[in-house]
Length: 530
Image (cartoon, rainbow, N blue to C red):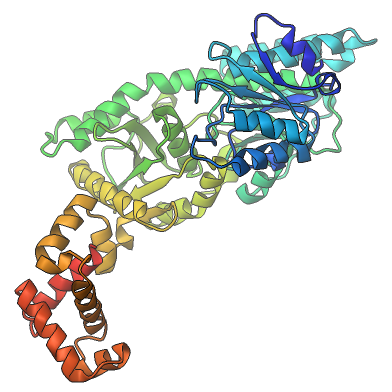
């Protein structure tokens, strides 16, 4: 299939914004959907690139579009198909960048989904393959296709599906991987891949569902040495796309009890009686320990939920449920690995495809809450790498011993999330990390911090006054040097009498006595809240 063939399809309704005839005659090898600002390392030569242009804003300079298109050119992309939904149109700077780099540019109207384009390309490719001599060698054998359909209907796990899908090829090593490198399934001949190593294989792997969120993507990975015809590979990927959709439907059905449980935990004075029943309905134990985690990404609700579930699925021995909180953010309630869990396979609503090899390969951080926190912090860089367009922040509570402690744990997690958002980079913060006055204050809402600073500093809070800025600097240095007049004078290159004079002015303006420890702490906290 060639780029110009897409323009001839009325069902897609694509518009050519720029592209010379030789570029439109390029053959399409595949499709990649991305909204990374520099996607070159994830592309393969000859692919068309679908982008919703989330990475671009009207405030961006021309260099942003130029960098994106340059990455496409460097990777040998066949064309760029840009969606109109995000900005209402395709920016002119992107058209200019494509013209400079020699990349054909087509616009995708709002009513045309990326999935429709992807299906069109691959169905056309499969049709081309089927017309070749000995076409049966280019597709899954009929008996294999029938067996996989039966296994899907019977609810077989991903490891079984994957093994049977490639059995007629001699069962080569094959992995089904998540967006963070978690092994969902692998064939018996495939070695266990640590998540970090698996993540490096994703660039050459086949996406199972191109329209899934960046955190919900699954990838089919075979070593390059294993030659599998494209049609056969995509048929196998389609099997897992169907499995994934079924799992998502089951997960959606389990959301009602999860929302009820989190709502009960969120209520300040929730009755203790309904909590055990709500825990049972979610397949969680009635006894702790529990850990509560809250995440915020700024992305849409479903994408945020995908991010939280994906990172938690690495905790193979733990059960959890997630739901949207009424006050914003997505929360998870995690049960300890050694807790008594309600019986029944249907009770486990934690993950999609985390059975078999996937669960074993992910490893377990142990049953202690500290082990959970350490494991999640180790996974955070991989989660951030999934989507450069969003910034994931997370907060984790301390252990909640009983259901009655869940409300307090949720408060802790939200407080830790606020502290995480004040960090220099997107991170995961546990309430146990708040071991200093500065860390403790960072969890306060911004308006509370501001109000406290203004009240405690009095007139000095107005730092637009040069005299006030000078006094604040002296106060900060004085407190940093533990109230030492001599060391403060040395640090500021002042005479000790000058330091005495300035601190006297601070005391007068703030109404505080810096000979008292509590007043020193008040002003130190006020400085940290600025």
